Length: 393
View: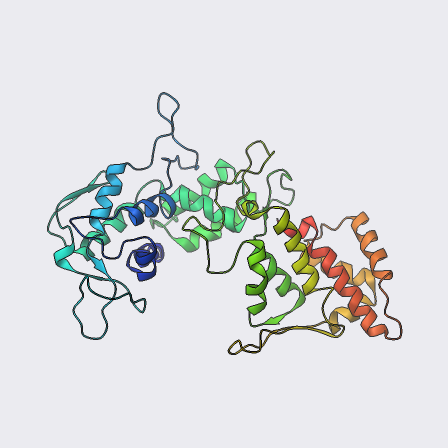
């Protein structure tokens, strides 16, 4: 069933030795259950902090205070559920709390260290005498069927795929599909993503300019540029430069990710812009500098940024600019293509005129082919540093 995709992901988090080590679940024992991972599991990965309406807005009590999605007792009960897990054993060794750190497989359970007493978690009673695996599976089901999960996950999926500030109605429509895909299936991720991308708010040809779209985060900005220009890369160039923009792949500085999903854009009267949480004067300049280096500042014929010679298996990054150079021999045709595939036909007349003027001033005496390639790279630099490209609509 489709919901198993999400449920499997939730379980994989819980038995991952990397996550167990990172958030102190590994070697958590019945006599002293560790609450770190259970707390983050509820707060960050499934429910969020506030009890939500289906449209993603927080529920409040009679005094106007936000109602929490879970209690400290729920955290304690879940920490009891998640006791008894250890690093995977090597070979035929019996799992024990003496297992050395091992990240080559899922964590294993030690029955004697699991709290198998009865528990009450998120209002659901769990009988005593269950194994660590059985407790884990039941806890996953309890979390997965909590009413907060559809709006909490749906809103963040919309933020990553379409826009930073979806309307409550948009969230409600997607959460409804999460609850039931039309065939009685809860949590059909395929149906949820389809609904997100085909929703009228996502397909609106004239979206509200004040709320539409999202800022491309550094990794997606760079992959978008690479895809646009047709780069062939081993990825090393990304690792060398993305650190300056605050988003080294696979190296989030904390369990809270690179940026918070509720980061409020300063001076915006409450609008959120999650990826804008990475922006400061340094990263703004670095975004432009990286694009400049990967386009206009490339070599005259082929840009070839190779990795360090001692980097195993390095092939570097190359771009064949010749096809772009041929397009640039007719500047209007080049800008038509870039406007269509990079800007979704949002290039203004003033921008087109400014880019055309800049291209005509770019000369390379004695070699018209190189001159055309330089003009193409300049145009691509100006296009990919424009607000229309930096903001993903």
